[in-house]
Image (tube, rainbow, N blue to C red; front, side, top):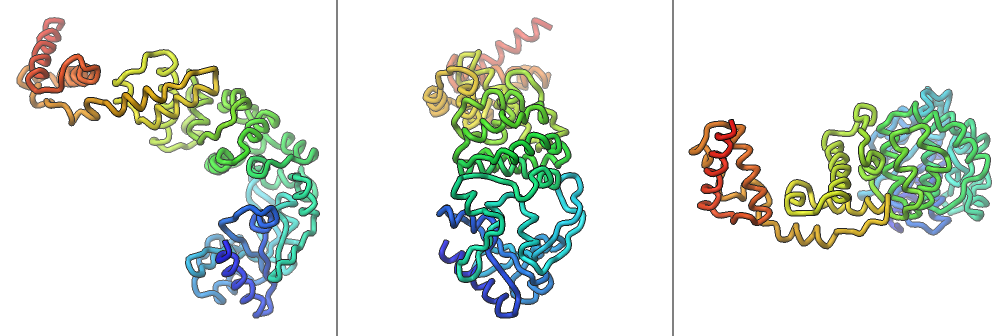
Length: 390
C-alpha cells in the first residue's frame, strides 16, 4: 500500500512540476479516510491524454476517448484521467460525448456519490466540495446534486449504491433510495454483460445480508423477473454466493434460464444447470457414487449449501466428500474394459453405449468388481438380454 501511494505521488509530482494540476480521486481517497486497504489508485489531472502519454514512458490508452491513460511505474498501474464534463448520456449508461475541462469541480460534480467525489492533493489535503466527509462520518450514501438525474445518466449507479452498502455497511440517503426505486426500470437499458459484471462484485461484499435486504427493498425482481426466487429467499440468508449460484437459486426447481438475454457462455450455462439439477437430486434422491461420478464435486457441494436458502436442510457435505474419496472409478477410462471389448458381443454402437453405462453403474455401486473377466461376463449377459428384447 505504501509503495502504491509512493509511486502515485511521483506521478502527481511530475505533473505538477510541468504546471498541471493532479489529485488522487475517488475510491482511494474514500477508503483511505475509512482506513480500508485499497489496491488501485485513480488520478485526475487537467493534462490532456496525449500530454500524459508524452510525459510518462510506460502508458496504455485504456480509455483515451474518455480521457483515461494507464500509467505504469514499477509494476503498479494507475488510471490517469483528464478532468472532464460529461455531455448527454445515451442508453442510461455512457455519455454521448466528453469535453475535457481545466476545472476540478467540473470533474467531481459529474461523479455518482458524495463519498466518491473526494480528492486529495500531493500534501494529503482533502478537497471535499460536496460534504463527502460528513457522509462518511454519518455512514451515508448520497447521490451528488439531483439523485434522479444521477441515475438517469447512468443506471448502473443503482447497483453501485448497493455495492457500497455491501462493502461499507452504510445506509442510503432517503432521496437517493427513492430515486433508485423510481429509476430501476432503466437497468433494462444497460447491457446484460455490465449487469452481470456488477453483480459479481456485489455478491462478493462483506455485508452481504444488507445487499440481500436491498434487493428486496428496491423491488429488483420487478425488473429482472428471472431473479424473483433469489430476491425472495436470499433476504433471510447471510452467506456470500457467486453469480452462478444466484441464477441457480432463481431457477430452482423448475424454471428455465433465458440464456440469449443473459449471454452466459456454454460453460457458465452448464454450471448453472448443474446446480439446479443437483439441488433437486440432493433434496429428493438418495446420494450415491453415481451422482458423485457424474458431477463436479465442487458443484455438488455448492448445491448442498444452496438448499439451505430454501428450507431447514441438513447438509450432506461429509457424505459427499467420503463418497468422492472412495470412488472406485473416476472416468470411463478407469474401466478394465472398453468399447472394443464389447464389440466381440455386438456391433450395435447404441447397445455398446448402453452396456458401458451399465458397467459404470454396477462398478460404482460395487455390485461387480472392476476386473476384466467379471466385466466381460456381465457384458455378454447384458448383450444377450438386450438382443432378446429386440
